[in-house]
Length: 111
Length: 114
Image 1 (cartoon, each protein chain N blue to C red):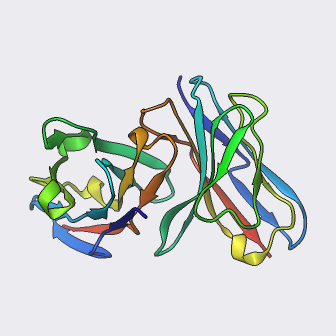
Image 2: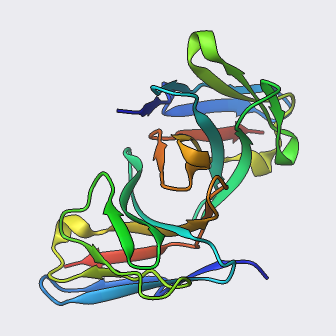
């Protein structure tokens, strides 16, 4: 089944403790993106990647890092999480000129 | 910079009534337009998209949307809503099919009255 998977689905952590949210797709898509969703703000893009080793900032990249060492994986790294990064995070993938497919989401709470 | 405006934060509709959700966009080139639906606690599901061609596009679950370039709009419609349509609806715009990322509106929360 074609899908985008994210892990973990739920995470509660404390300020300053480094964490990684994994994202994997099995559709051989070149493009992958990370978004955060906050009430009343919709979804905002954090980072995107056009292929292996090619990444670029989205609209809200501060406090986040990404890497794309393999085509299928696009982890989101929070080196020093803060409470304002409490949010619902979505990973997405797509082919060039194609529709984005979204993962199920990761709900992160930073205390 | 591209932007999407969904003027209605909440809309309440009676079951069986018709529905129209508004979306206005700002984009410098030919836009790629999308409507996604998010049910409570769920991820995003694509309802329909417009890339080019016929300005009236059909989607899943009986939804349709019409692209009006002169009004910079891409409104979503359904002739008769069902209780299961209660959800959050997002309009989005992108370039290159949206592959390098989408700009989303803030969403419209649809409530269905029995």
